[in-house]
Image (cartoon, rainbow over all chains, first blue to last red; front, side, top):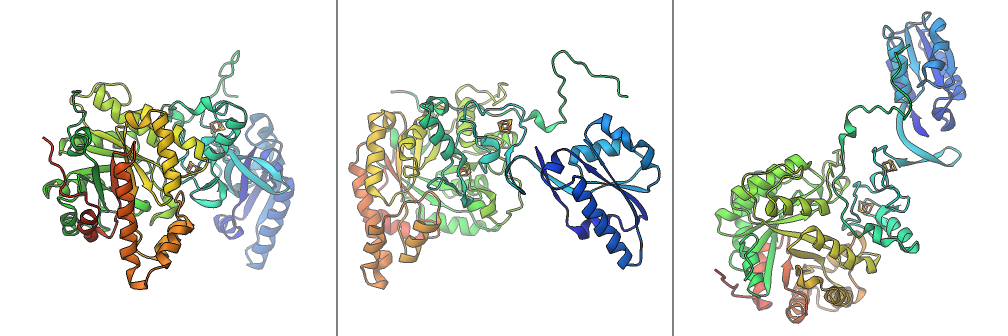
Length: 223
Length: 311
Ligand code: SF4
Ligand code: SF4
């Protein structure tokens, strides 16, 4: 899932200081699961903003609405009849959802209430860890299911570097060295031959916006 | 005899079968050319080539190629270091061409310490390519006259290609395979991490000999004289990838406080004596950073002078 973190309250309040009518929009998918921008978090932030602005004698008319997925046109539609009542939109979705919202209502100022942080996994309640940088050409098959791009502090494809330190990464004793783990796992599987050859340089053309069209589908006319 | 790959002094010395002796110089944290010249004066005539570090420990310093040029002006041979942290493949290739055009003939390919350690921890770590891929790239430029992309370049940078190796890091069994990988990528010489654990190093070189690796690349053993007990303890506890046995620390603690530095140099010289006889070791790389003025004394005491002249 995509993991996000709520921005500091003061920052959010500051972005909205010039507006009197704001709609706070949550998202029921990734950011709800990682407890950053789902319905519950929308309730909390909305109440906090309402309270803070009252105390400042600058009341804010704030509405709330959580859609199933802000990155999906089908679900955004539900907002069409509501948005017109507000001067600005606050979104608690990931960066993709926020942009899709802004694209749908181009005349409205849109503000992010969360910092979208990574693609990660759920280690425990409220505890998430990054696992993938969506590099576009997955090498997990070669690296024993451990991502060198994400888990190695230098993103090395031919690690480890000289800083590998008794199983830890040079940046921090508590951070395991990805290439140490890759070695250990492949060694146990008897597959060390996979990392004997030099992996050629990566194709970083993933730095321009990417599009995926699955086989059998085509780019639709935008609704 | 096979044609020289780069024709650097270091390559010639090694090719002729002499025991090589290289030094190291850290460029200044400023535009001070005089400081480079001053440090270089201590190294001149005492080493075959001088490694010029590249933003070492992720601290901004005078560019490695620029300090290398100052060394050439002073009549020394630089070993131009390049890390993968600060430049992408375009900048790397253009720097390599420029360095060669100005007379640089040795190059050391490194990953580079993580930027978090340095004076700009906010910087983006580039790592567009890694050190293994950098070795391959330089070799391709030199031997195939091609850029990484495959396009032709008009004059090949004839560089003697080096890399670092850490004989100590865990898993130890993987260490020789790492070396083999670098040799397959195309290195001509290796300079190792500073050695203090001689037992482990002997085992590493034995395995490298058994795999035939020491015949495919020249191995220069890394030596850094210990100045103080504090330095030894720091290296043991705080420097990732460093292996300092307790016995070495005990040895330094065993001498009079004023004689610790002397004892450190003595230990380094004993190591050098042993490396001279060790099968598979082609030379020593002396890293006496911020201790350059001691190099003449160490070279003298290690009996590596005069340095050979090979045409
Ligand atoms: S290699 Fe790593 S970053 Fe790339 S797709 Fe696979 S998990 Fe994601
Ligand atoms: S120590 Fe390991 S994880 Fe850390 S940068 Fe080096 S290879 Fe990557």
